[in-house]
Each structure stands twice: as structure tokens, then as C-alpha cells.
Length: 438
Image 1: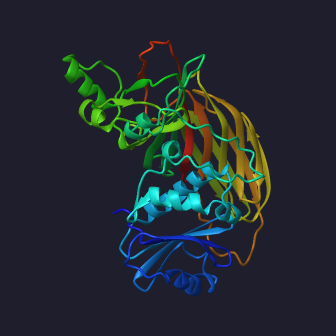
Image 2 (image 1 turned 60 degrees about the vertical axis):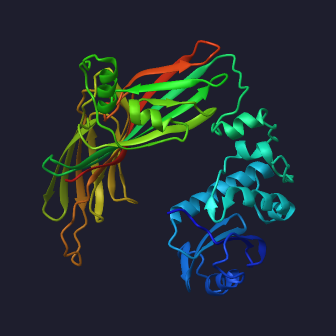
Image 3 (image 1 turned 180 degrees about the vertical axis):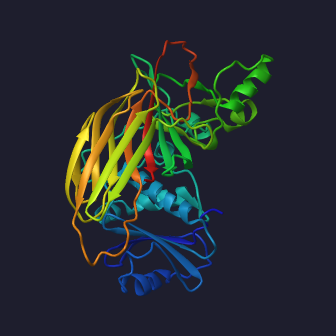
């Protein structure tokens, strides 16, 4: 359900109303008094950003020295409301030269009222794109004298932009060298038992793009996902080529992607925004290629000694390597002394987190470095509970490797002028929650 906001208020830290706009008549004009009395004066602002007073709900957020309060009388979408506030503040900052505070609101209240009428209609959010709104709300805001952001030039060809549904890109862009940078960044989430069985494993990924292309290009991205390959072979009446295919779950796209074409042809077609943006997000739960396998052995020798042996095996190719590998092996709080032997990297005891921290700057593929440590403990009479072993945690980054097996099959760029394009593709796999019980 959308926001369906009844009113929006801009308050300073004292609770004075700077600007307000009533969108519906289902709430009274004194709702801000209830907010001041029941929330601000009771010093409960930092407890929860959503409060219900009577039959109305208050969603509020502090930006600099201004509180933005949305009042709703129905069961509205809270996430949508806060998303609207964040996007509205970004819009105001683009008009005010990067500043949004009480002074900026007082200096630009006429412009803010005009924007509030455009970005919300009868309580429902509308277009909040600065590029589109600046085409027909051309009034310039009073810029802060402390703003270092240069003034943006007006965008030409307003009619095409307003009616063409391409609000994320303007016409007339020209680059001497047309380039596209594509990054596939994945985070591996793993929970493994002490016996080596996988309890939970999934991959969350995102595709980031940075486009420096002239004109209005049309891009087409092909991945080795199972549904897309099957649809392509069906359209071309050809058998599917051999090779690994993956199944993408929970896919979300940037607004520039043509969803109609994706539903019919299963191809990612889009007119990209200029510069950097996030093209899509996805999740994979089947067929995950784990970059590392950890084999821990921890022996408690009485109450005063422990032996720790950890072997980490890199499963990826021998020509690849991981960077910034950190293995955190938990030890009891009463640890007094440690001694280490490592075949690669460096290790030390960090009493702040009660862990043996093993760092390897560059970890080649198909190798098995080991850590051996002797831990001396302080014997305490009051400590009667047995030590509950927290899981071993890992941090790493593996370039040119994807745990999901996702690959870019092609990236086609078409533009009517027919210029040549340089495409760059990079893969990076990081550790999300990589834990091994010991």
C-alpha cells in the first residue's frame, strides 16, 4: 500500500513549524501539537521513528537540524514513507546547492511549497527525479554560502524528457572515449558445522555499472542464467549451448531496465543513466562455489591449556588469488598467553575481541596454509560454566571469481551514430557472513 500521507511537517529542533502541507482532510490542522506534546516534549524522539497517537501514525526523521514528520491516518507503507523523505531531501539539496537545514528552508520556502505540490498528489508520492523536475520548475534556490557544489546547468529538450519516460538520462551527452565498466560483486554467506556440513549457504550479488557513453545508447546484457538461455534458444530455435547455468532468485532491477522486454525475452535491455548506478540485485541459494574451506581442530587440555590448529584451503583456481584474508579464531576470555606458528601471513592475539587474528595479505589459489597455536589460560575458581565455542569468522576478497558462477556472456551497445565502445568487466567475491563452527 502506498504512503497515502495526510500531512507533512518540517519542524526545527524547538518544535516550531517551518513549512507544512495538508494533502487530505482526514486529519486536523493541530496534529503537530500532538507530535510536540507526546513525542518531542517527552524526549522519546530517539526511541522509535514510528509512533501512533490516537488514530494517526507519525513517521519522522531528523535531517541536520530539521525534523520531517509525515502524518497518516490509515495503514500505510512505512518503508515507502521514509524512502520518500530521503528522496525529497536529495531533491531539495540539488536545488539548494547541497545544503538542507533550517536556514535553507527559510530562504526557499516558496520553492519548497511548489516542489511539495509536484512530488506528492493527494498523499501519494510522484516523480522525485531532480533531472525531470528541473525541466519545468526552473526557479533556482537560494544557495548556501558554504556550498562548494557547482550550480547545475539547465537541461535542454524539456518536452522529450518529460514525456519520454527517460528521466534518468539527459540528451546531448558527448564523450571522446565511450566506455562501459561493469562490476559483479558478490557476498558469500556461510554457516558450517564443526563436522564440515553446510548448515546455511547463499550468495547475494549486485551488478554495478559506470557508463560514459554519448547520445542515447541502448544496451543489452546477457548472463548465463538458466531461464535466459532457455528463452534465447527457444527464440532462435537452437539447442542450448553446453556450460554452467545458474538460477537467479529475488532479482530486482534499476528503473531503467525494460521490464516488458525482460518478461517476454528474458534479456536485460536498458537505456543507462550517465555515470555510476546499480543495475540489478540478485540472490542464489543453489550450486554455490565456496572459495575457502576451513578445517579447525581445537583441543582443551585441562583448564589451563588449549591447542588450536586451523587449516584453510583455497578452492579457486591456482592462477587466482585472494586479498585481505582475515581468519578470526575465538578463544576464552581468560586467555593469558599465546604462541603461534603459521605457514603464511601473520597471527596475533587480540584481547579486545577474544580472538586469534590470522592475516594473509595475498592468498594464492589451491594452497593450504595452516595455523598452529598454544593458548595458556588463567584458572579461575568462579568460572564454572564451560566455554561455548563461537564460530570462526573469515574476511576476504577474491577478484575475478564468482561464488555463484555468474558470468557475462555479452554486453551489446547500440547507438544510432554507430560509435565504437570499450567494455570492461570485473568480478569480485567478498565474505558476507562466513562462519565455521568449531
